[in-house]
Length: 409
Image (cartoon, rainbow, N blue to C red; front, side, top):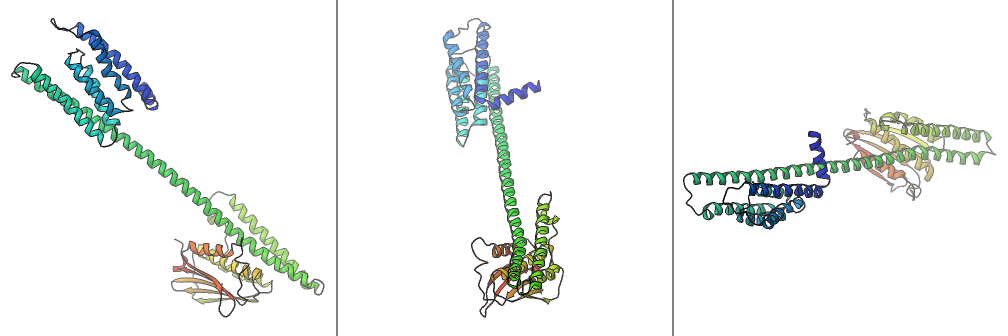
């Protein structure tokens, strides 16, 4: 039985107009049969209205319920208007008219929209109860006292309770539907937010991967390019130096392949890449300096303040910024000497890379270049400050400051 009820409810929600039309048709048949039974069992002396009249009024009263969910307020108005002549001609319907009017009032509350809903219901309730009082007091034609008075009071209270129940049930259904719609809207909003977060996460990860690839590939390729040029220039005059340069190119290319394979391997694994990948730290600056030194550029590293342990994300970002700055020196500058300064300030950690070149940055800022952009993005993740530009006395400086030890937000 419960399964049948659930199926019927689901069908009604899927096709409300068809369900309401079917219910109205069934109720119309029952209404006609009820009136027929009422006429047949009426007391002696009762003169029923013509068959065409009571059948027509019954159908006119019940038929609007087919649209009770599509235009509920109009249905209530029509049912109330038909209810008056239906009762005036004294159709013995065995409470069919009351049930129909109750359904119309309930539907107006459950499916009506806006502030007009309460106005329409209120006017129809006042009209119906006023008509009932008029029928009890005026049409009866006899003084309402004694048992008749008690009967009249009972009828008024009964109908008032009937009205209150229809009104309240309609409000409850409307509130439930509004709550369900709010849940649906909230779920849709959360789904949109999740989709946006996923899209943003994918975008951020693509930026991170692009930044890492740029840092790894650009540095190694730049070093190999400089070493290859040096080998070409001394190949005929100094074969030993050319052989050293070629050996350095071989080692650099191997390291580049290892770094790329490591990165691509971690991209194929599940989990957080940041947690899985063995990212370089400041302790590896010596190896980086030595690699750049093989290109002929002298790199000096100085430390100011008292060194302390930094968050891993800060060390990775600082290393990558130094790496990119040195790569730009090798690729785009005429500098022969570079000063790398690590400053452990009380409330910040600063990295500065200064060269003695001509201060030009055409290569680093050329279309398609992402070196300075990547460095600025890295320091931006830590809400730090970044500056890169030529110096008044010549040379070029890249400076990145990580506030409060550069802890990421």
